[in-house]
Length: 149
Image (cartoon, rainbow, N blue to C red; front, top):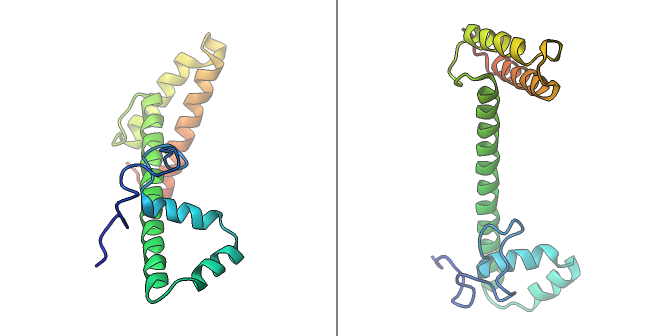
């Protein structure tokens, strides 16, 4: 195995002024910089560079790029999953119940909060809309998951 990192020159920060990934979350290493460079290159430039490689170097570079893309893909899936979980918990927080509350408890919490926040009863229109959206999101998610009770 060739090991992680792809060389000493790329270590913690890249040579492009220390810029990180597109979101600025972490510094780019040598392999990440290589992937970013390949993504930005034209097909003709990539073909010319590939033709200049000898031996198994092209295969090694392709394997490294594929590995980094797989890591980024897994990170993206994890972040999307975490965001979905946080949004779900946020909807429950609007209603003032925990995610494991029964459908009956959820409905009761919604009715109570609706009485407090309804604009016709002196409540805030934006708060009432957030409440409706949260309840709608939760009930739709529960119907999709088949959770009852």
